[in-house]
Image 1 (cartoon, rainbow over the protein chains, first blue to last red):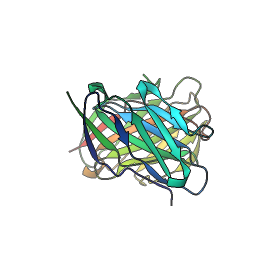
Image 2 (image 1 turned 90 degrees about the horizontal axis):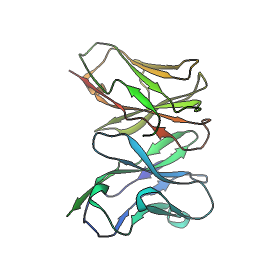
Image 3 (image 1 turned 45 degrees about the vertical axis):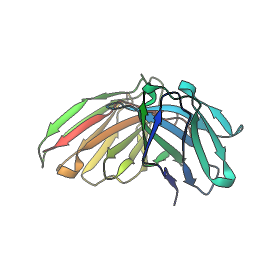
Length: 111
Length: 113
């Protein structure tokens, strides 16, 4: 069955430090992958998506993600984290019209 | 702002009651999805409508139902509510319902007492 795993439940970084959030997927065909961010009390905002083509995709707010088929991964990165990036991050795979989400990674940023 | 609107923002009700959540998709989007976010189940797909017709069903309970109206807004009806139905309910929309970006509304937080 299709699934998404986010191994890190909670990550803490200092402001200005680099960030990498891990995402692994299990999907038989070519995956369509997404990263969403949810700030406290807010809905889900799309950060970036991978459908095909260049395996390094750029998103909003300075985020990028790299699709690695050999590792079944789609990790999210940011070179320098800002305090406003504190939120919960969800990786998702499109499974024939519905999204399957990982359990999320909560990011805490220290000044 | 995604362009997807949901009402109400918060809802408090009692067990056994029935509630209706409303969603208006982005202008031009034909497909509407409903998701439930709870602490124990995470984010789960419930149901999808495309241009008024049910297209896909997820782990939606029989006590829950949905519909999409001719103006493309959608309603999710939750009946015989239980404490475990307390959750954040999201609506999302997309242009055509194929593999494409889904834009999420701000959610309706339901508390069942």
